[in-house]
Image (cartoon, rainbow, N blue to C red):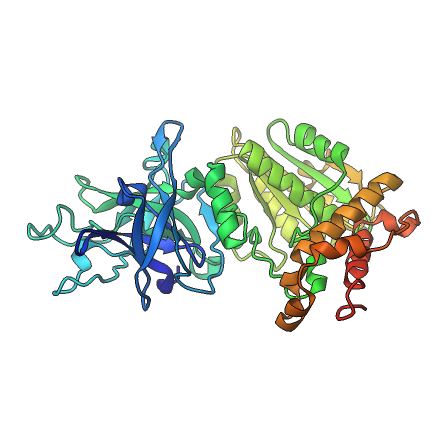
Length: 476
């Protein structure tokens, strides 16, 4: 949570502001708040610390999810509220573990003596089970101000719309997990209710607006697994070469339909824990296929998906046994992660019966089936690794063999790289080279029938080189 992005949502009257809510700046012009804050209005003002009020229009209002009210709204400012603004990371809770959270807003109780707004950041803990059947999160506060008849009916009036962040400290960057919508009385301790972020991401109109105005597709990451899995996004394009990294996902996924269908429909079906090993030479597209499988299982079937952090997990493996929905984990370069995989398989083998299914997809250059190879070391390491590897699925990723498939892949890569190439160039080159999508037509025909073009990475590298060659300022 960045203090400079905590917005006051100001409600204009005829001569002065008549009230306020809270919000959070998602992009230079896009603000998230609660829907009821702007009820009956098409416009309002927003102001961040150190800034001046900026007029906004309401561009999205939440509807319902399984009958539950999604009390959230998006505001679009007439001009930049603040720039630059990095995209937020979005989170959801996937276990029943309580989570400390950060939240700040502009409640009535925090106003200065003269009535000026002031930020308030109470200590809070999120209880994911409380309110879950109504698609709400419950937040318990350490303290609350006493009621004041001279103020609004609730001392927390004005806090609605505040963004709720979970996952702090050594476990990683905080994730935007909910939006505060109301305070709850009668429990002996002060409580708020919040709309979970997953309810927002379920609306395609919301995700489209966030993508358009932040430049990043919003993806819900499991808060509880921070430190065990790598961030879902945030890969920064810093040079043309970084466009080729599979984490950037610049070139759209192409081909491999049969293998992807087998993994999604057959291997992921059923209960229990299952392993699969995907092997192939470097650049064959193993990691990219794993990311595509993860995206499909997450978006179409509601699975929790993530890649094991290759820096070594600093979290608690035991939390994996508590995940309350189907789980797909990916481990790239499995041949160098035997200790990590051993610890992981030990936890998964000891999970209580009846828990949701877990799938672990390993990628490697090869299995090394000869005695002493990494696969042999892993499967014979402990009783748990023997139990979970004996029926593992193994698939070798074949090269792109069809000439027409290669040519389509190459042409698609040219277009996709052209759209993102300006982001990867220094500012002076960006201004000098202009629109790269028009230069795709200047790329001469390319014969991709040679064996080396069976590698997806080679096709992408060739497409990038050919594209850069069309301008004298970037010609290799």
